[in-house]
Image (cartoon, rainbow, N blue to C red; front, side):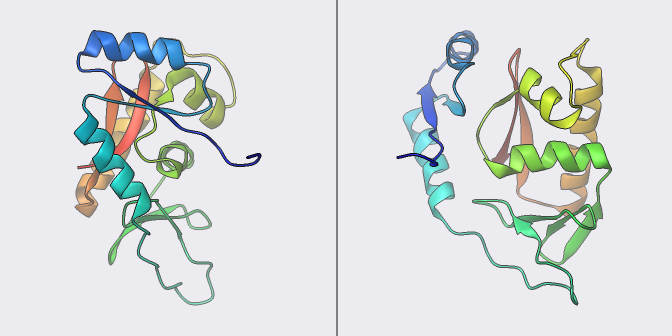
Length: 162
C-alpha cells in the first residue's frame, strides 16, 4: 500500500524499556510507545473516532481538526480552538503544535521536531523547544482542552488526551 503512512506501536512498561525501544524505532517514520496494551487500545479508539466538524467563521477556511480530539488549528489566523474558545499561537507554537497534532499519541523525537519547526539540526540543550512546549501547555490549560503534551524523557514529545 503506497502513500499510506505506517505506524509502529511498541509496548514497554518501564521508562528504561521505553527509551531503549525509542532508540530502536528512531529510524521508523512514525511510532507510538505506550506502557500497556490497554493504553494502546485507548489510543486506537481515539484515532478511529472521527473529529467533530467545526463551522467556518465567516469566509475563512474551516480550522483543521486534530484527529481524535476536538481541538482545531486555524493556520491562517494561527489560532488554537477548542469548542467555543480560542487562543493565539506564535509561529513557533503553531508549527510545533501542528506537528504533534497531526498524529496524536505519536512520539516526535527532538531532532525531528527541531528540523520541522526550526529548520535545522541544532539541538543544543533543547531549552528552546521546552520553552515553546511549556507555553503551548499553558494555552491548552487556559482553553480547558482535554489534551496535553507529554515529554518522553530523552526522546521527544507527543500530544495525548488528558
